[in-house]
Amino acid sequence: MANTKAMVDFHVHTNCSDGLLSPDEVVRKAKEIGLAAIGIADHDSVDGIEEAIKTGDEIGIEVVPAVELSCLYNNNDIHVLGYYIDYKNPELLSFLESVQKKRLERAYKIVGKLSEQGINIDVERVLELSSGASVGRPHIAQALLEQGYVSSFNEAFWKFIGYHCPAYVPKMEINPQEGINLIKKFAGISILAHPGSYHKDDIVYALIAAGVEGIEVWHPEHSENSAEHYLEISQKNGLLITGGSDCHGGRKGKIFMGEIRVPYHYLSELKQKRFEK
Ligand SMILES: [Zn+2]
Ligand SMILES: [Zn+2]
Image (cartoon, rainbow, N blue to C red; front, side):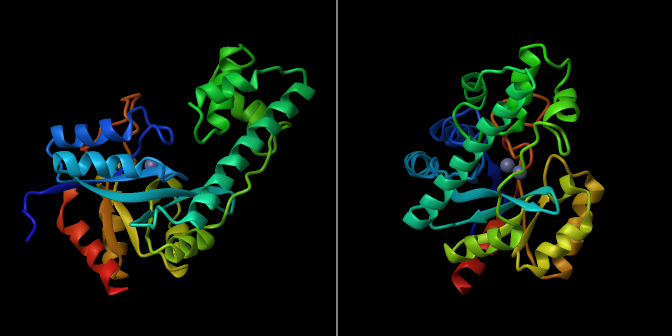
């Protein structure tokens, strides 16, 4: 029986995507703050899992392997978490590699389109800002800001790189159905990440119809009311329930690891589902 006071943070990033801490540091931090288990869920990457599990075994923290897939649904960036995905599967690894490659290609295309308009930012700087992983428009916006082409982050989006803008390049991403299928294919359990950040319940119902197995109910972007709302949707639909800090390692207006933690029984239920398969 799991300790009833044991708590889990299901959703933490490492520097294998856009987090600041290494997997080893993340796990040590989790121990320090008294968590029983931690979900390592990097964006389109499983590269940090092995190191995290190794440290976890050493110091006695349960590491839940996961990935956070970016999917595109009616032009909304939807994140789907895949818990206990077979992170060593070569086919999964080559898929994730192709995702990273597409992100990189897109960054080069956007920088190229900007230079056609006389806006010259250094692609090397953009990559530096992304710390080499999961490069995206926010890093380009930051480079534009640094070079003085815009006076705010938002201006970069509405002037240059937002939807319908001259240097806009569409994302080449999988849709949520493909994301869910992919997670299933590699033995993972799919959870819709932070539904509150999409502001639309039709997305939640579309994902349920597509076979998503659970909902991230507690998240820094969810108010108490919206968490209750998603809890109700989950319970009505017999879905798994998770919650996490989505910590990226630095405060930057965001919260730290473990500031959102949920009772261990939610992890037990998720594991139970895994063995029912
Ligand atoms: Zn996310
Ligand atoms: Zn996340």
